[in-house]
Image 1 (cartoon, one colour):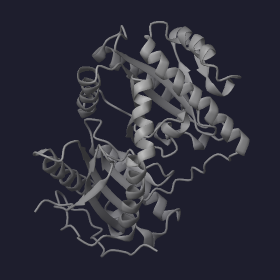
Image 2 (cartoon, rainbow, N blue to C red; image 1 turned 120 degrees about the vertical axis):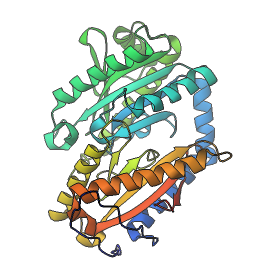
Image 3 (cartoon, rainbow, N blue to C red; image 1 turned 90 degrees about the horizontal axis):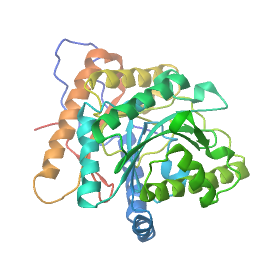
Image 4 (cartoon, rainbow, N blue to C red; image 1 turned 120 degrees about the horizontal axis):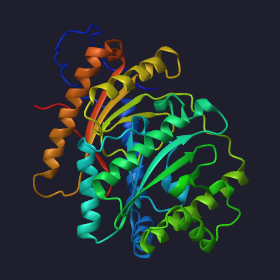
Length: 375
């Protein structure tokens, strides 16, 4: 049972300053921290670390995935790869603006991959849908698969404008994800598609030949990595069919609104709405997510007594120097911005509010809570 915190005012006031932050850790935030502790321990375990290191030697191309915040879209599980091989960027509806802060974040990732490690980079740009029930698809696009697919096509063009159309080092790939069976569908040259659920074999030679028709200009390093993802996905689909898994319930029950970055480890379906700093208008998706959570409360999908958690996060690489303290300030600023947006546009939600802020180590994925407000 989640403990309720003291209520905030439900009246919206123009340019109202957010109320003073609470210091008590609520039950919902405590559960969030416990889940992170378990996932971080798994990430840094000997087995996972050794598997990840071995994988990187065998398949050196780095892999980035741009995807919706939907908790079902766990591509490590879908492709049977170690956690940390596929670098995910998650946002409400899978919407990213390369001209915003996202372009800087992605550019930094690509610079590290190419300049520091000398690796090629596959950028998987994804959309998703459910073949069984339309309403189990992507709510961010109003369950319109064609609209989501078209958006991804535009995103690929933007990426090629920035990183080049020759694909010598950076190769953006359009990928559909069917969530009932966790199927990957690859789009390629001439409108061709390759659906992993229709593959009769996980033979690497067969897959390589099929993928070469879609991506005739893909170099060997990237092709080798892509084939491995496909092999893992075919085997994962076979396991799902063997167990006769029912489609994951998508009745929206989100009671966590996450703003910022560093939530890659959180993959519980229908629990969290993630708003990354990936567009020029950060207020709009925060307000949209707040309205979804308020609807979940009003319609009884989550108990009122549980409330909702607004949590902010920023990742960092180095413990030494000023970087960690800088990202602490960023998480605090994100909290102030999100609180102000919700208080102004969704004031009714404030009486259910719990807050938490933190920073996440990229090396361990451990979330360390910090004071949510500047002193």
